[in-house]
Length: 161
Image (cartoon, rainbow, N blue to C red; front, side, top):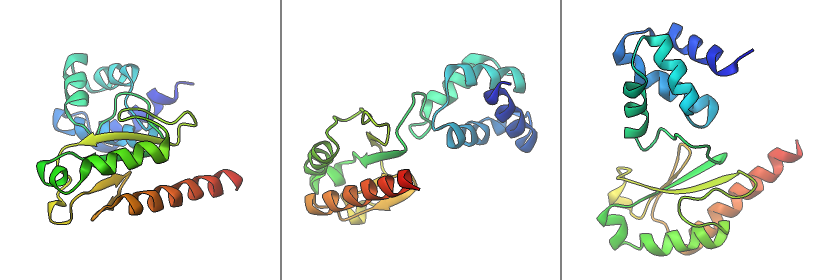
């Protein structure tokens, strides 16, 4: 059985085939699958009666719709001028050091992906980052190491259970 087709059909049934429902369907699939594959885009296009180019264009336009496999924890560091002025580069270096990966990469165990993104809306508490849906603000190098340590422990605990 094709899991992607089943998930897409379920999402289309929930949201409807109208073009304005494409984004919620993409978001739902990305939440379930951790990314939207090219195959999934084709399935969505067929199911909704849209062109594959339309689905692809929407999928690749939004930075929070990943079109490549990502880690369990997606770390998105704000790259606005405010975060930059408040030490964003030091935060990125601390993350790269703690995770042993570079910006844009995923750890070999597929637990963490490190990305930059446009404004997270937390300029008043810059620098800021998002780990999945959790916002972290007023970041320092020390705070970053503590946060990553907690996520690694959470991952280890989850794997043991």
